[in-house]
Picture 1 (cartoon, rainbow, N blue to C red):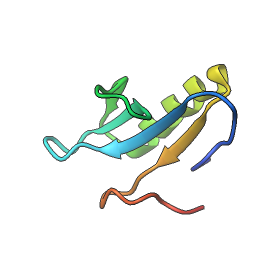
Picture 2 (picture 1 turned 180 degrees about the vertical axis):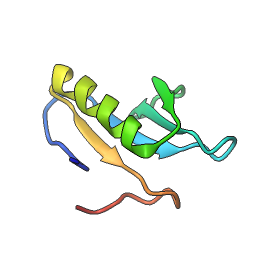
Picture 3 (picture 1 turned 90 degrees about the vertical axis):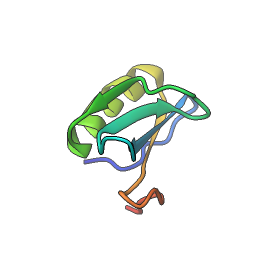
Picture 4 (picture 1 turned 135 degrees about the horizontal axis):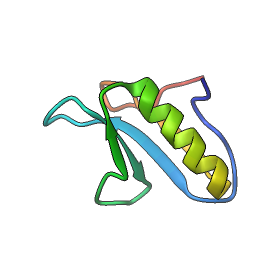
Length: 70
């Protein structure tokens, strides 16, 4: 599992929604989720596919909202 990928494209953030506990993938500075998932693992897999296509990077946040480390 890659927690962060570096690139020159868009940055995708994976966070847990406080309203329903679902995990979401959002663009940096985006106001809406691109997609929601039941598990963090599913969100990471989706973000990896999208970021690979866009040469982007991924930032995974823990349940507390703080950025996770490698």
